[in-house]
Length: 129
Image 1 (spheres, rainbow, N blue to C red):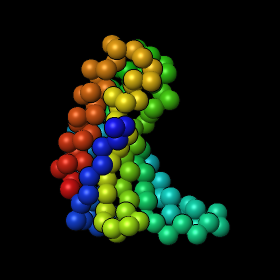
Image 2: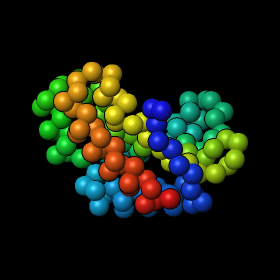
Image 3: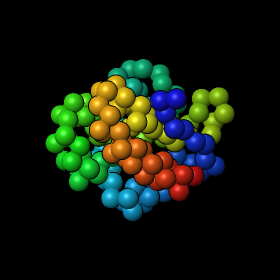
């Protein structure tokens, strides 16, 4: 499976606030928060599902992995989505797994770094549930 997704009893705002705290503890910063619902409405589309994408980065790791392979930049920054499920109306959080993305580059030497980042980001999500 290319992603890791969990459900939480928290509102989207509560989940994002908790997630930001967990990310900071792991030395990840939120670079940008993209509100898809708001953006599509501004463009004239009737998208009624709360859906946000957080772009997160650990500068030390980004520097290290980009030094090894510039193609990694295609996957940066890491993304974590927080949205209200259209059917259940429950808040969900998840991310594309860095290990799944690294497989596309087919460079085994980067898999350890991808695994470490994946585990750290999943831990942040799990702490935020």
